[in-house]
Amino acid sequence: SARAASGFQLPKATTAANSASKLSMSISPSSIGGLLIRGGAAAEPALQNFYGDALGYFGGIRIPASFLAGSSLAAMFIFKTKANNGGELSTLERRVLGFYHFNSLLAFLLSLNTIASATIAHTAVLHGRFNKMAETAYMMMRREFEYEFVTVRWSFLCSLFCFLGMIASRLLIEFDLLKKDTNGEDSKKQERNCFVGGVFSWCTGHSLA
Image (cartoon, rainbow, N blue to C red; front, top):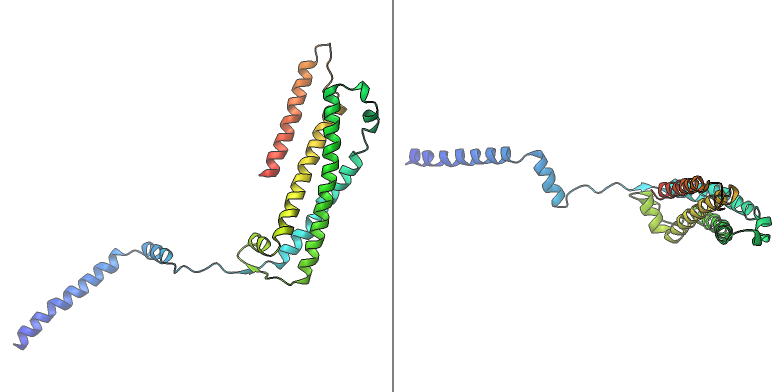
């Protein structure tokens, strides 16, 4: 009876060992990793200190904004003579001239807003009374300085677009691309206008990208 009992137990042990080996061979390391990820057992991304990134962003964006503000302020008074002699200009030229002055004023004001908001945010960062740890610098800025971050980005990009529009308007006015000629040069001027519009569109798209 002992032999029968031992003979009866051996197949069970062999069967269990074979099934365990088959199970271990059927599960690959990649499937184990996938199961861990789907089960929520994946390691969380490490948090980093982005204090220097916030300080550098608000401090560095004031430099190009200052250049835009100075250039826009100087450009406001370039076409003062043409603006006073509006009777000599065509309707289209007067509209482009008004568009030029509007863009220069708007670029100046938005650049000033960028400089002021970035300076206030830079001082707040220096106080250090915020949580500096996050997964990315963008997440930390949106969490701790959402208003300042969005305002600075929006004002700077809009001032840049207004500055580009001002430059395109000045090209049209300076080179008399809006005047009609009777010497058959209208086609050339249209080509130049298309070129100016293409350059402006490319610069705008490149800035948005």
